[in-house]
Image (cartoon, rainbow, N blue to C red):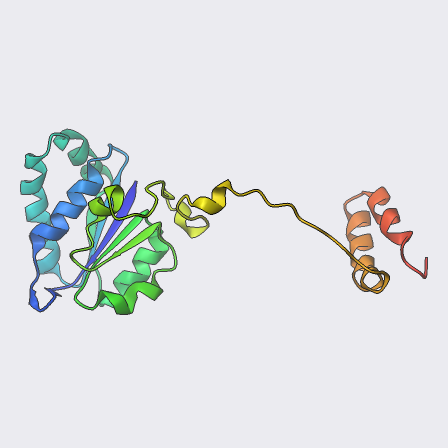
Length: 200
């Protein structure tokens, strides 16, 4: 499980609530010792406030030992120059969950190219996403959000490819196939194409 929390100093017109972000980070860390919870913040003060609250919040959960181990080994905070930079880093991290603790989170959603699920705004609680919000909880972990998605109905559908070519299309694309066949040392493949080419 890996999680990135992107936070700025203000949320919904009120002063930033470090407890909200800290609670999300602890929830992410309590899965197991291999979990990763990273905060991307736009100020040192913000990162320090969240860190202090994490230390308090972790004492309140039954899996405190696992969460503390995860945070010690793979948790942390990164202070960036702008929220744009934070969002881009979160996308590069390709987290299972990306929590946008931002007043204007909607404008950043499209910048997240790689994530299992994006939670936009302080009320979009990742834990509700786990249990009752609706999306699949079978998420790409360990950075695999770069090339895969959450489990969905499409994963249970079977597709069959179909190739239907006419003579002119084989004349156009067949010679490249011949070259590839011979280059791979598969002369039978190349000759099977050549039998369809008019000039051969």
